[in-house]
Image (cartoon, rainbow, N blue to C red):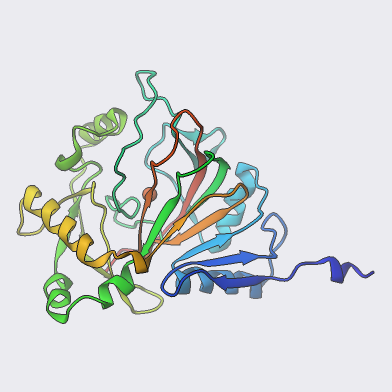
Length: 289
Ligand SMILES: [Fe+2]
């Protein structure tokens, strides 16, 4: 038998009409040719969420795989990085805060996109499952381009010009905030970063509703309370189940999200005595417009 017949070939299958594709037949610990790299890049953008199955990564290999999609950027939460790998962080429900207590996992995780308090938020977020609970704890992703396109024209026209002011922790979630992050925010005194509520995809020209519920201090012209109410209603109207996909983790799964046309959230519907541990890294992006 030739070596060729043992090789699996790359397969990309759509998961749902509006979002998600599953990839098999590729091992990202091995060199990846240009055509495969391009196919994976296109698949992330076209499907918004891409699941690459059966990967066996060390944290360093995970970072190298993510670099196929661009330059990595640091996580602003420094408390839970993989030792020796400043670009790879650990998401864990067993994480300890600065007081040594088990950090709280929010019961109602909110739709968001990562690091909107940065001028150049990440193009892509990568998650890799290291330990997973028996059931639940899935990661949900919603195609906010499809959600935007399905809105009435008058609503689209109204939100098209809105701008959000983004901080690390908005006043709406001061009570539930991670104390370490809050202390850092106060110490740094960073001014809010202004972003469009509807952003344009730089590679496709499409538009998507784009914000972080917990980092949006306010929409310009609204106060923080009005803002949260407005965003909550906008989500109800736009982020419909048909545009969303919940990834129920299997060990070895790599999930890649195109943040420019998606919001995501982590499920907290699992037994918290079981460990849910993912590696996360991000690829640097451009200034949203
Ligand atoms: Fe996130």
